[in-house]
Length: 296
Image (cartoon, rainbow, N blue to C red; front, top):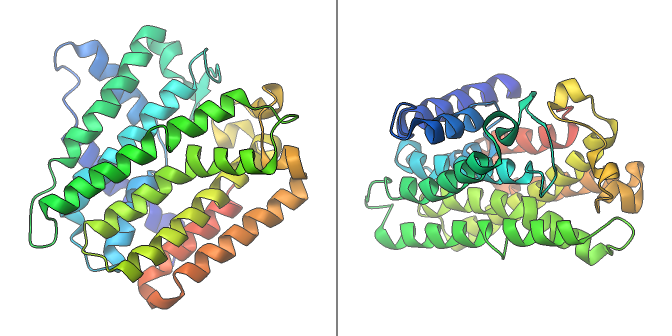
């Protein structure tokens, strides 16, 4: 499999859907829709919606039917990036090689753009058609999953502890919590969204959840390493910001080499979780390898 080419096709599929599902830029008041679209279409690999569709693919689900829910995950991810970049948070000027939303539109509009994306995400989920497989009950379950993953039990909670922690004060348990919640929770919700809307059995849900949890940890550890050794042009944002902000990271706690081994271990665990799915899971296998070995 040419993974990069395949990922590109899936990313394009998601982008076409996002373009169709979002309000046109001229919708009144246009400035907020411009800010929303600026951030959403600034780039990105669309890994969260891609994961939702890939887990559905493995289980024989209808990818077009779950597409609105998959796109909702990208809206939530983009909202979190807009807010993370704000001066009160990470105070970043660049995102994906472009000025961050607050640098382009001002802090107030950036906050509102994030709010709009988060709210709009749950509207999109309601656009999934009710079928023999996608039932009202499964949609409610997915809404609950994504709400938990993006709230204080997930992304928001992880961000809170991240803000409160420094590399000198965080212990292993705190660091694991930050990574598991700030990044891992949305990967978990993404994979489970695709599975739940494809009629997953308990065994399938457990296997795919295990994959997602290890993938999320591998991604964040690799991201921590890239912040130290990566190239700003490839990454599209400033490097060494974690060091500057004294963030709790795996390289800060264990060193770069040990952190790299830990990312590799998480990758192996993710691969074991989907051992039983044969060729149907090849894309997910290549995805976790890409996540660990990427340079951007």
